[in-house]
Length: 194
Length: 191
Image 1 (cartoon, rainbow over the protein chains, first blue to last red):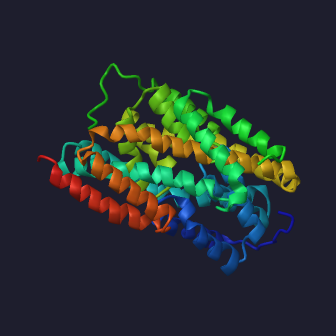
Image 2: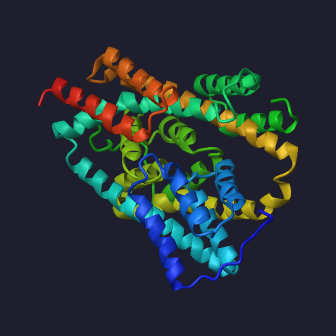
Image 3: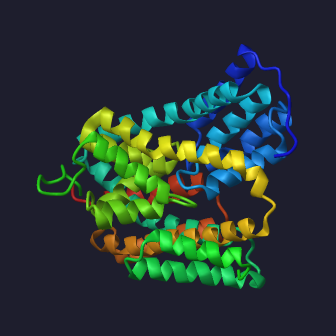
């Protein structure tokens, strides 16, 4: 994040920025991650509000940091705000990006869940829960495999696959705390063994 | 089939218990919070069973929005209504947000260090393993499924192949394969 931009942001630009996240919120099935290409188009290519490096760093930091990955949205807001004039704008950027992204989807999810709970004995609600269960289990294993292949599927990455596999078995069969596993992975990587 | 949680089951004692629990969950979640959520809420705190976790996770997946955030809304809302949903959301986001900002500020100084890049790669591989293990653990909850184990295995595998091999967008999996599975469950269920 060496290169920065200097933006002239008025109410109109902030409104457009907010509107962009608002419009993506209800489309984000599978999470905000699925909307990354569209954010890149809007923020980096069309409006030049973020550099490509700032954009990529926002995603990478939020994924590496503890906490929900959706915080990359907050970092994008922060970086746009910093480009527009400093810390206060950064905080404004965070607020607008996060409320735009989360409020519509959260309102929908909350109400749908309350409805589902009130009607939990309906045949259709029970069928939804039973039917989705095997899909969701398959999806979790698929997500793990996709993440494990993030640095490539070629054989030269076998130590990463081995590490993922061993972590999976330990986490599955033992009560070892998650942070020990992460610390082990971090050390192996730090010393260049994987 | 989750009715109201029985009275003697462990549950969050208060809104602040909920907030602190979700904050601690979020802070352990390097590379994703899901594996931690399953272990803490189902295995350690026992607020929910594996079946209930899968049910809530299905809803969290299919609704728009980040799935961990949706899960916080669902679990918080179950115990304390709207207040609980908001507190769950805040617990998941507030402290991690401060942390991620701090990291963003120092990141530029360490991004070039080969050790840092390696450590992130290592943690990423571990996080991937944890999510796979979470999926494997939840297979046992399918034993009582109305679809029967053959259909469960076929649908789970189809989902796996669709995502990993064919690389179908999630949308098609959830609504196509998911729609089929729900219809099948509906026909096999007594009304």
